[in-house]
Length: 99
Image (cartoon, rainbow, N blue to C red; front, side):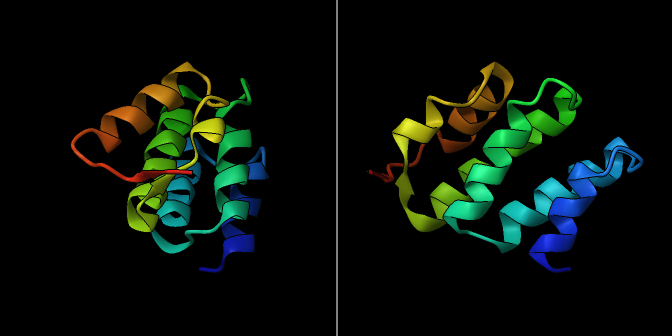
């Protein structure tokens, strides 16, 4: 599936939480660019999303940073609590370089 379709799934209020969670995971697994990271940060900080989805955003962001071997600590600090926790737990044991 392409990135735009996955993003539309997340923005569609009629889409189930399970489908949204799958879209988050697919975004993190298949698209390692700044646009995807910024989109996931925005979703993770939107209080209208279920905690499962926001936590998955944190995991997907961490997956991208691990794949790229770099963490943007400025963006990391913009994550709300559940996403921040998931991204830092997922990154534990890795030593990506500071951006």
